[in-house]
Amino acid sequence: RAVENKKLQECWLSFWHRPDPVEPVQWLRVGEANKMQPWKSSATGLPRLAVALLLRGVSASVVSSFVRYHIGIGFERIVLFFDAPNDADEHGAVEAALALEAWAGTSKIGEVQVHLCSPEWWAEEMRSSRFSARRNSMDKFFSDTLVLHEQIRDVQARQCLVMDRALREALRDGLDWLLHIDSDEALLVPENSDARRFFASVPLDVEQVVFNNLEAVPESLEVGDWFREVSLFKVHQNLLQESAAEKPSSKKYEEKIERWRQRKIAQGSDPDDLRTNRSFFTALLSVRLARRNTVESLKLTLPEPDQDSDEPSESDDERVQKDRKSRGSRREDLPSFFLAYGNGKAACRLRGAAPLAVGVHRFASDQNKRLVTLRCARLGA
Image (cartoon, rainbow, N blue to C red):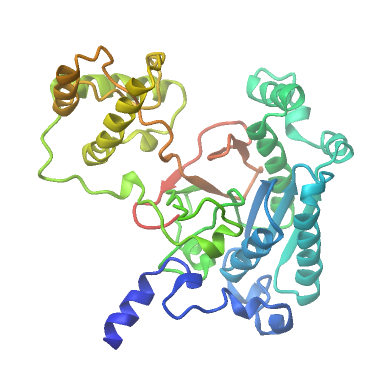
């Protein structure tokens, strides 16, 4: 029984939910900070890590959990960009971040940078932004990003812009890697409690590492601090093994999948993001059928998926055809919208010219060219 319990505890992704719960990263309490080794120590010979994010609408507890966890696994610099610092609802999170900034500076176990992205901050940032400097270049990526930020305050555009600041400064200050994730995400490297050892193992020619998403599954409608309250996670589709029991797809379906892949690759998608998994699609099929029943009961008329839909049709699947015949339905397919996304998140190596954030999932070179990328093939998120 003792052995079984030990194995069970080792399976928990979060220390918060072990059968014998302990305070998460308890060694990072303010009063015990002197127990931590300064991450900046050059004697370790390990890479220096930074993580940066744009955040809004999170609690003070979430900010504290995010910062303490990532410092605890070896990140030297945490860069927090507050998207709406003047909103009344943001005051608690901002105050928590500023307290952590002061605590980290005093303890010398890491560095927390807090940016309050007010209109004045943005005006100052545009003076040094590469996006602003290249607004009139032939590459429309820069001007398009600025237009989206200025005209509709597009979130992903602002994420690209604040990452530009984080990347430039991290490179200037001699850090080696920068990770871009969201405030409801945390890096998991199961075989390395110190994330620096994982990044030290990455081949020198690799410029970007992509991690698979293991999306959290909340068990209640209200979650205050997801780092403490959520312990169930979806398995990423790329980590699923094909079942030998699955029937092979029809030639028509395989041809459809290949056309879809080629369209997405031509549009700039990473081929590794477009891998298909028959077992995964089969698992989603029950959801598709259940959603179709709901749509029919509500008498909804939905548009057909367009040619560039992010999800190929399963309409040639035997079970879909059987269901359609039994119901006399004219709809061939109802996609399972946003059950999970498979793009993953990335960290980029900092050397030479600072990379660019191209969207929220990937980086590119300073000239907006594809980086040499390593996609994690095992558990890691």
